[in-house]
Length: 141
Image 1 (tube, rainbow, N blue to C red):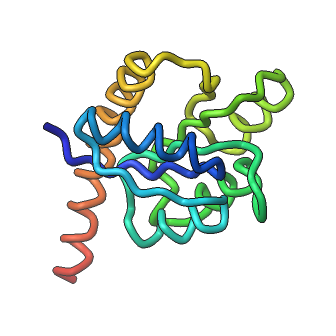
Image 2: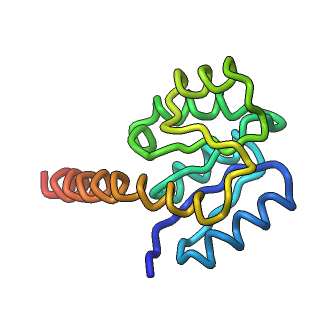
Image 3: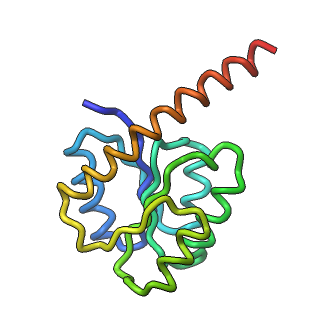
């Protein structure tokens, strides 16, 4: 069973609970945030293996949060998957240009979502391994 941490940035409490349940059942450790600002703070503190990001949230949109996460050294390599109800191509393009790795519509089936997350975590685990080596090397200096 995986103990990868996934940060779920979602302002709807029902969706947040559903995603937390689904991901916990799939073996992931889940951290939640209610908006983009809180998501950035939790990503910096917890350094998750992957981030699920909603697009439309109070205080800070998903796109703005993605842009900021991509500028931070500690979060720039973390895979970010947008999970949104909005299907407009302009919004999808904006999220990808901001640095999202993928854009999923909230109607995605639970098994499909966990399969997609598993695929990205293969990349994420390599990133985490490289980061651990860098941190170890930095401590040795």
